[in-house]
Structure formats: C-alpha cells, structure tokens
Image 1 (cartoon, rainbow, N blue to C red):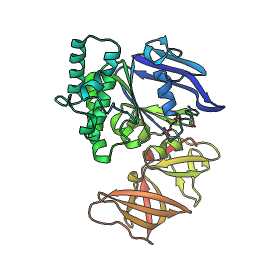
Image 2: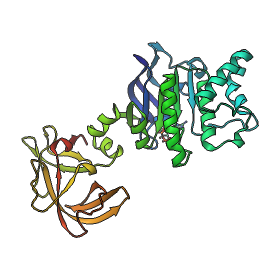
Image 3: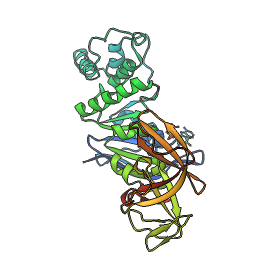
Image 4: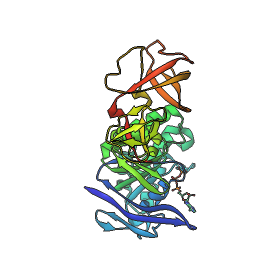
Length: 349
Ligand SMILES: Nc1ncnc2c1ncn2[C@@H]1O[C@H](COP(=O)(O)OP(=O)(O)OP(=O)(O)O)[C@@H](O)[C@H]1O
C-alpha cells in the first residue's frame, strides 16, 4: 500500500530548480534509498516530505491526504540528519526522552517508550551515560532512538552514516536494516554511497539534476540500468557506442555488437559491467558472445580481484576478474574480451 505519494513536485531556490516535476511513491514498510550525486536534490526531497520546505508546485500525499502545506510537527515523521547533534550535557535517557517531555507525555509512558527505543538500538543500560562517554556508533544509535521514540509513520534518514568510519558504518548498516525490519517502519534513506544503497534498500531511486531518472529494486537497477548515467553511477560500466542496422551496433573498429534488446537509431549505447567480461584464452570459442579485441594497458591488483584496463579504440575498458591466483594477461598483450548478449545492456544516453 502506498504511504507517501509525491506528485509532480517542483521546488525552486532563487531561480534554480532543486527538483523538477518529480513523482515517486513509497509503500508501507519499505526501505528506500535515494541515491544521486551532490546537488541532485536528495535532501530537498526529504525536507519537502518532512515539512521543512514547501513545494512550488505539485502535491505530497500521506495515505491519500494532502500534506504538502502542513508544517513538520503535523506530519508524524521522524528525521535523523548527518549532523545529529545530541545534547552534550544530557544523559542518553534525557536525549531520547526530550521530544516526549516537550509534548507533555506522562513520565511513566516516557520511561516505557525510551526503554523500548533503547532496547531496539541495543543501548539498554546506557541510559545514564553522557554522549561524550559513547563511541561514534553508539551516539548514532542514540540519535536513531530519538527519531523512532515517537513511533512515527515514516522515518527519514539523511546520510545518517556518512560521519562514521568504514567499520562502524558497516555495523550500523546491519543494525539499521534490522531495526527497520523489527519496527516495520517505512524508511527513506538518502545516500551518495551506491554500495550502501544497493545493500540496504528494497528499492532505490536515482536522482540527477532534480529529476528521478530510475526507480526500482537494487538488482533490477544494477542489471538493467535504463540510462548511461544510472549504469555508471550505480557501479562500474563500460559504454560502447555505435550506429545501428537491423538491431545490431557497429563499433568504431567495425565489430558488430548484439545487445540484450533490439537497438535502433543513428547512435546507440550499450553498458557492459566489468565483471561480466571474460578475457578469452587464445583460440577459445566465443560461444555466441560479443567479442572485441584490445590491448592490456594496466593490471591493477585489488586483493580479491584483478582489474584489467584494456585500450580499445582510444577508450579504456575495465575488466574485473576474481583473483584465483593467476593473471590472465600482461600489459602490452592483445586480448579478446567476451561478454554475453544479455550483459550487453542497451541504455538511453
Ligand atoms: N536553502 C537553499 N537555498 C538555495 N539553494 C538550495 C537550498 N537547498 C538546496 N539548494 C540547491 O538545490 C540543489 C539540490 O540540493 P540538495 O541539498 O537537495 O542536493 P543533495 O542531492 O542532497 O546534495 P548533497 O549530496 O550534496 O547533500 C542544489 O543545487 C542546492 O545548491
């Protein structure tokens, strides 16, 4: 069931469109990642949903009711920002209880709800500590408890993990996902980290220049990017271009490329993921795959993988192979690259 419906929303700051005619829906209990480069409008979308900004055009519905002109406190959303600023002189308990106290919730109920929230973020027993006596990850969890203690119908998280170092971030990702499942709360999560979006979310929306360019389950976005932008922003992709005849691309060196779906037009673009390309052994049958021939320029050791950079028609193509203890080709060698038709994804410019 749709909980939030954003309909044709435009938001302008000083003549500059932060969001343009953007529509998207969020279902009950879902975990959504909003992904995009800096300035693409992610935070603006979140602030419009939260009620910290108001759209210039378009509607925002919560369970079918228009809320776009309601102030934040009337919308029943919990929000957690990157700079989550706990009150340093207050205990963990008082930090989490603060919003409830301000709303004059009875003391006994505050105790119960704060206790539940702290249990959920695994901080039971830490209630008397001050923020300065906690680790970065624990402080982050206090901020999360503070956002969920209201039992809001929607949780909005703006880059909540970006201040944490990598190890802590991975731990918090797992925690966040568990808490979201336990509470079943609809969660919108802004990030510019594509791996974080792919691992955490049920659905990912990709923003670019204030527009939603593609939205769907992570696997679908990764396997079937609709545009060259999505293909390269969400993971690595080699882009191969050329004119088409009868659904087949002709590349600059005359090679024919058969894409996953029939191509048409003066110039088509295919995206091929580096890990879907095989370096064919000399004489190896391509077995119906697309094949292009280039020259290895560099081999990069990355621990669990090897990245081969291959010069082809002035382009540097990337091929990634799992590290099985051997290297398939050395710089200067000519190599044939084989990749299946289904991995040759036709994308829009
Ligand atoms: N209060 C404001 N006043 C003027 N311009 C703003 C304001 N808020 C956002 N913008 C502009 O709107 C555009 C979108 O900004 P937004 O913060 O939504 O992007 P973002 O995708 O969240 O970026 P980041 O990843 O850097 O946080 C940017 O060009 C930004 O400069």
